[in-house]
Length: 204
Ligand SMILES: C[S@@+](CC[C@H](N)C(=O)[O-])C[C@H]1O[C@@H](n2cnc3c(N)ncnc32)[C@H](O)[C@@H]1O
Image 1 (cartoon, protein in one colour):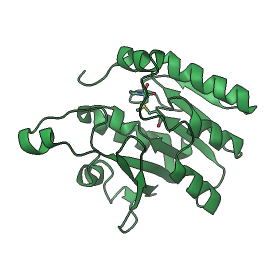
Image 2 (cartoon, protein in one colour):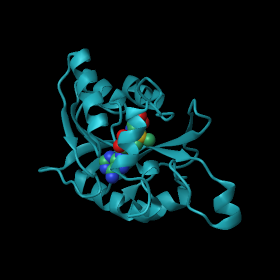
Image 3 (cartoon, helix red, strand yellow):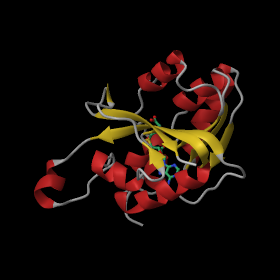
């Protein structure tokens, strides 16, 4: 299986080598929550990492399922929830294979898709079809980090893997997902990358 495996991610957490981690919830998630665009519901957070977003959602009354491949991330999320005094479900699983007993109203995607090798992105899209109910929504931050090695030499390098908007349209086609009109909101990341924010509504 190409791309980073569980040992890679576990090691990144164990050595505190986590440059993607803002040390706070996603600013775009906070905007969506503060504006009331994303009201409390049953929501899943794939690749929850240290749990900032999952715990913020639980704090705001969402019923949260946080999924991560590795124990270190699940432990961090559980500890953060405990410290915040909130309850959420934490599942250690490969999100490409894991399926919920019943579909969620929403998924919050932050830096999970770009952590997965693009060869597996069709599996990610299949998971979202299975995880999200009809008329539910995928609230996503698509990581933008185009690399010269891709443009000049055709290499697929990451993580983070560049979530080019053309590839996102192929993964989440208009027949199945309602897209907003551009421009999408541009969200800077302290590591020097930026993300494009989008809410994709799953068509009935
Ligand atoms: C770049 S980190 C992002 C963590 C968190 N979302 C954040 O923004 O701080 C990617 C996370 O996805 C997890 N991950 C990678 N591949 C996964 C998979 N196939 N299934 C579930 N989690 C995965 C990693 O363990 C890691 O916690």
